[in-house]
Length: 551
Image (cartoon, rainbow, N blue to C red; front, side, top):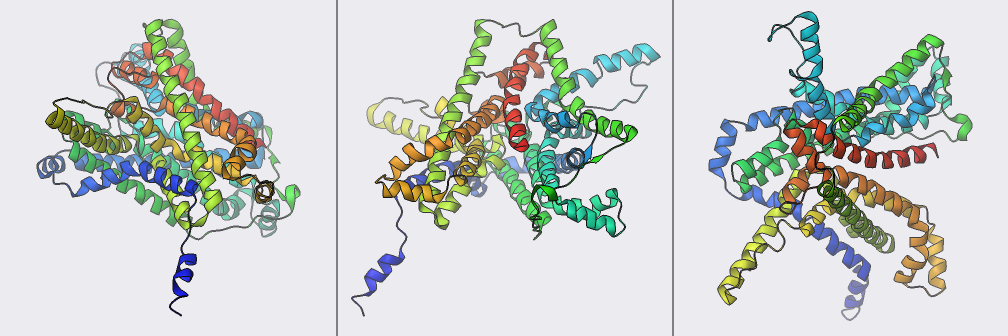
């Protein structure tokens, strides 16, 4: 009996392939910034925290909570309403609105904040025109203050509602006409059936979209800073750079991380245990669109056109007008440098992230098991974290490594190595990998699911090993999915701001930083050129999403 025990135990241990081991190592490295932030919770910083608690910390928390609640509520209202109109009714312009309502995704939050502040502020053309027209003077009249929490909620909801719209529309389109007909036979009108049947069935998708909106709201930096709203994200910057307290900044980042985890839990509670099975009747069972009368059709078209106009058409047109009138004064070699920096970082991040996502997804397909699956899922948590949190989590261990190495080299060889990792392209690229891995990983995993396992078995029977299976079978079949993932990452990195601001090398400016600097100085007409380029690149993933949903 004793002699048989070791073989039994040996067979019970999972054997990990080199692919799985490499994937686990990569996942652990990607999780390093999160662990770095969490570890700083236990480092004492009483003096700074006492000042924060007495002065600005309650304001940071209050504004962050108000921003999340306000933006989620308004974005959900717009996204659900437009998603239901497009999915359930036929009216003039519906086919255009199907894809056009996603266009605000191409508009960075900080860009639209700059435009609306420039137009609606006290010295902007709208208030100035009203004062001239009606003879108003000073502050003797009321006008909505865009530089406020409600103003920031309004601006961010306009660019974030497509997250809810996309998922809500897909959920409504997947519902069965049979259920709606059953509700009508029970005496419900189409509106009543929406609230009693369609909306509850779509609730899990709506909750998922609302969670995306909440996380993007917490992560926003440029928009809230420009509108004068102090949140936890802006507090991290101020604590690190203005107060010179990186430990306290990391602890603020940990507090923001706690908010993100709370959002995950809230989204899970909102979904509850709701699972709805689709009717198996095929296309004939899908929701049938009702043709609206002329008056109601125009009202539906106006309801869809309003958020599209406010969230994309007006800001884009205003940027185009300003670019035509003035444009960037550095147009020429210096401006081309901003473009090259942005394109090179976005292109490099897209290639690197697709490669990392391919490694993780392939290891998960080969190995399976809970360890690899949990590691790959954990590695994609960075998408839920604000760029400022990731940046802090990266700089702390890299600075510690650089300082330790420099001290060792000075003591041993009398040579200063300086900063080898901190403030380098390598650190910035690592920040992009941590931040956007989920985008590439989810797209790559979805592409893998369309390749049947029987194809893997056939390739192995023909003598292909894991590397040959990947290069000769999977990659040719995954090209479209990998290209889609690369385009999504490319567009996201082009408009990324907080992580780039913190981690970038000295005097390394991208289009996003160029827009941020000029607009922060009130020079929106000069920032318009770079902003338009960012928006143009952002339209690419919107087109891909639209085509995918139509298929």
